[in-house]
Length: 233
Image (cartoon, rainbow, N blue to C red; front, side):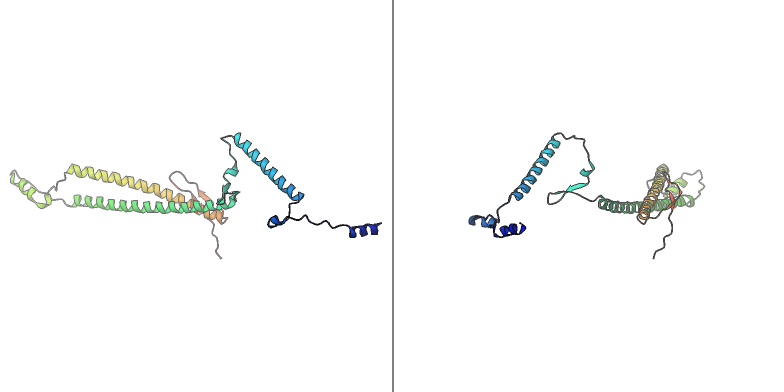
């Protein structure tokens, strides 16, 4: 029986592909039913997806939030894709480190500027104090009024348009400004120490080093941290 069946298969008519007409030959072979089924199912799935998205947009909560909102973006080709959060966090860390270095450079600049102002102000006040203490000339005046006229005519005793009360107020203002600068330098030094410690801690975390806190910091002082010695190969 099997031999007869095989013989009949050998002589049966060959089922050839249904040809495309000559005018449409450039479009390729005709579509089969299985191809049409795949295309129809794809169309139906996309249609249902669009309908569900349209319904979700109509009933959307304005306060709704999902993490995918911040973990995806639209590319230049207009396609909405998710991106790797680990890579984003690495870039964010690098950006924060650069910002920290910029802050340190700015604090160093302000510290240097304020220290220069303090040195200049101290030297000015010291010179004015030396001149007032050393340049003393005692004169014993008699009853004659000509002595007063003679004293006023001396070049060393001219007032130069500035009175003693005005000099005192100017000195007070200078000392007040000096005290403000000293306090500002102390605050900036604390900020610099904290920023420097923060940068060193980030480098230690990157190298997987566990530093030891010796003394906790406060509002006006940075923490004292001991970093273990790492041998470089």
